[in-house]
Image (cartoon, rainbow, N blue to C red):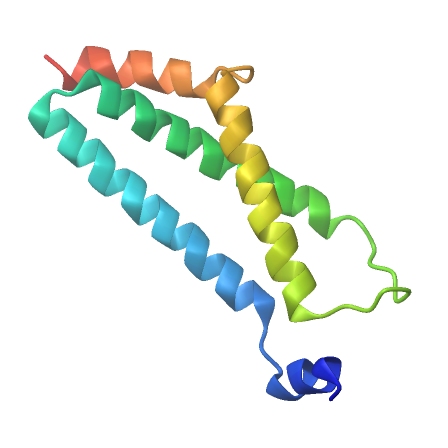
Length: 117
């Protein structure tokens, strides 16, 4: 049984899946931010800011991946694209938790001053 033949027959566009997951993450951030400000929960607000930084970094990773030409040596199928996007997502989550970029801290300071009054 040839699995590649089955995956190519389905003709699913991976970019549709990836765009949907990014919009879901943004909606989750908005809801988490709203909940944190209503409850005046600073720890939750900090987590929300890290999530937003992670989404931002993930967008950067996707843009960087788009500039790299794909080789036909290993083939190009949907499962590789999904695996790469999931791996990039985990990388960006780790990057945002380290605080090395500092974007989450800047957003947190701004929001905590204005929203937590």
